[in-house]
Image (cartoon, rainbow, N blue to C red; front, side):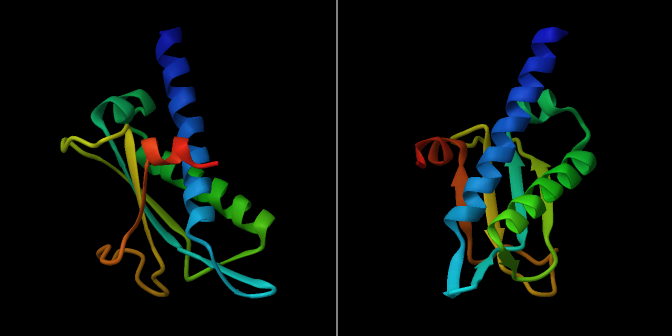
Length: 128
């Protein structure tokens, strides 16, 4: 049981860090005091990570949204619209434990992701 808790905590911390890095990597400086960032994030988890984190996707989604909101406030980011983080598990093989997709959607947080800014776990680890 302790091993499972450690895996969950490690996966959650890695996911928080990856989401913050993804946000930073896709920030667009629009002026000296205005940096725009995507506001809608979709995180696809492998079955292993999804099981490790538990079936509490709604609660984890809210935690990730809160972490990202604090990160954005610390960096004085401006969201393109209402901030939303969705989590889904996938049976489709991913090249990493998770895959993050984001978009700037001013009014439609549930719209389809068309133009994608993506980060996978392997890309996130390579980032400085």
